[in-house]
Amino acid sequence: MELYSLLLVISTLLLATYIFHGLSNALFIKKKKLPPGPNGLPFIGNLITIRHKTHESLAKLAKTYGPLMTIKLGFINVVVASSPEMAKEILQKHDPEFMGRPIPDAVTAEKDYELAFPWLPPGTQWRKLRKICNSRIFMPQKLDSLQHLRHDVVKTMVQRVGEAEERGEAIYIGEIVFSTMMKLLSKTLFSADMLDPGSDAMKELQVLNANIMMLAAKPNLSDYFPFLRPFDPQGIRRTIGVSYDRLHELIDGMIDQRMKCRSAASDRNGDLLDVLLDYTEDEGPDGLTRLDVKLLVVEIFIAGTDTSTSTVEWVMAELLHNPTVLSKAKQELSEKITPGEIVQEQDIARLPYLTAVIKETMRMHQTSPLLLPHRAEQDVEIQGYTIPKHTRIWVNAWSISRDATYWENPTCFMPERFLNVDIDFRGSDFRFTPFSAGRRICPGMNLAVRMVALIVVNLVKTFDWKLPNGMAPENMDMTEKFGVTLRKAEPLVAIPVRIST
Image 1 (cartoon, rainbow, N blue to C red):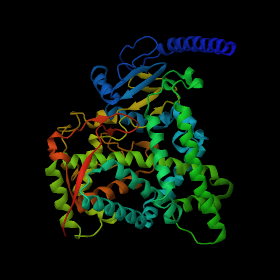
Image 2 (cartoon, rainbow, N blue to C red; image 1 turned 120 degrees about the vertical axis):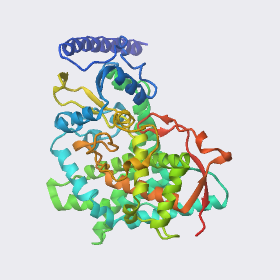
Image 3 (cartoon, rainbow, N blue to C red; image 1 turned 90 degrees about the vertical axis):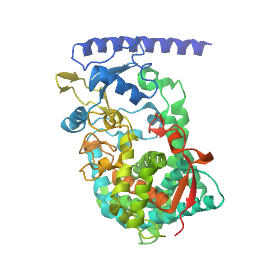
């Protein structure tokens, strides 16, 4: 009882101290001209206003308060950019000032999270890891040299779908794509010798990754009321920490196994793990530590599976929802690709319409609708407003990509809008930033685009697809579920029918 009373007193003092600090800080900020925004309720701010489908709620508010607005979430101020012009201010013109990252409380459950590439502040270590990603890991030549490993995985996927077709079974597209994405990444990182696609370790990796993404997507009071962080009131940090610890343990084991193989023989597999370990040995003290290697591998797994899986599921959903588009995609494949063959990565360049289908899907169903949040590293002036240091920044890419000011018929699925135009995945056109833009653009973009395209074209080329129970395409549920990634609210289920060749 005495312990409980002591904890209650401490909690009350912490709360009172934080409220006093918050009020003092609020008075200081009011002296600065923040972008306009809605008035919030005492203590909770605008949390209730945007709690459901945050990206859509913010888009509606932007119509009233403008493309640069301020919202208050608990004790946290957030500035939201909702136009290409404001996105350019944040991601390009003032890129150095907005390179910081606010770290979600759930992420702090990962051991050494502060050293992980996505959360590093701009500085020497961040620049080094960025350089390695661009020049060693995700450079086109290295990815080209490993594409045969990914082709093997896609062949296996096609075989699995074919077996389901023979049994007359419907397939949960997201499930088979998630499994395939995990295998594609593991092959690219570890080659065939490190992780058997059917092994218990692979299955466990899938479960751990799914748990981490699910828990990270949960609204966490500690992110909006930082004084609650020591108490972890929803238990999110404690629960997700178990999955993080086990994932680290598995990756550590794989790295140990590879290092033993390297010490016993001079042969190299040439996969991405070898690239990282070679760099560690070649550069000496200026290279990577063992911890750096592990954290990079962990982040590639976490970041590279859920987002790409969601994109493929949406592509397949839009194709089934739009039979005319699907027919055009199949026609292109029949004209450009030899019947009976697996489509390979080098073939994708000959398929402009299917590439446009993928881009249009990413426009309509932005995987990260608010991109990965930024944080001001100093006070920044934008169009007469002051964004104070440490303010969080959201770019509502979903809103921008569906704004009729910038897109003709924005809610219509029209891949043709990406034909014969110079709009790529690299964030140079701020109407279309599926991988963000600026120096914080996703470093794994080249690999993600290859994996998504490789899976989609082979699913479309090898099989016809029917909706279950005679459902008509126009009756499909195409609603979105907001989270870390913008998933399809109703998982896509489809029946494969093998195309005779």
